Image 1: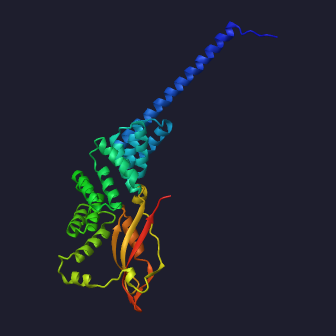
Image 2: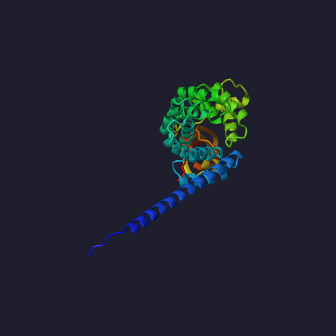
Image 3: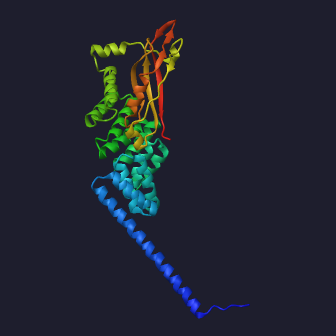
Length: 331
């Protein structure tokens, strides 16, 4: 048996289809309006310095529309300003997916990557930012720190100088420059750089650590003829290859993260050079490879709690230099 669709039935179907499409369009428009309203709310929160509120609103916006470049841009800025540097980098990576010439985004991505210990990726983003005409401090600092970690200390100094021309008080660049100068045996300049850092950043989380390092560097400075400096330089401390038995670790507590470092996404290794005394105690600690956001202080605090059997030479306990490494990883 065959059936024919009547003209009335066809018209009814077309009417229902048009009605359905109209409903979809209305719903889509309502969703779009709602999303823009949420974005405008986020803008007002950001402008009133309520970064937490802006972030929550913007997370809703980008969840609804992954291609909203304005929302990704503002989300990155809010994360960055609140100290959540790694998450800012993630947001800015979404922005450059949509806007490949977003200059500032590459600069902030470079900074997030260097804090996260991803040196080569940081260099790539930093160079891209500079190619696009970026004039901020972050990509120059990222290049300086990457060069320092690679052992190219002369380049690290030059790149840190470029960063400091833009922002003379940028603490991380001051530290990188001072450390690079130290390894270049330019001790007076290294000391002066550390003095500048402490003068411009007195409340840095690692401030006490750098003040102690500065005190030690002054004592080892050959221009210092004080009795204290002479006594310090006269101490006999052996290298590992020059002792009969090396100092042996009995107990080595691990350091914890600081909350600012966790928020910023700082990862990497703090390397310390320390003296283990004849009594098996840490008496001198120098930062050899630093991190930031208070992690140097955490590493030194843990190092001071290590229990040792001291080194010996010809049957007598002696002081010995030792390298200590503390890895900071976020999972």
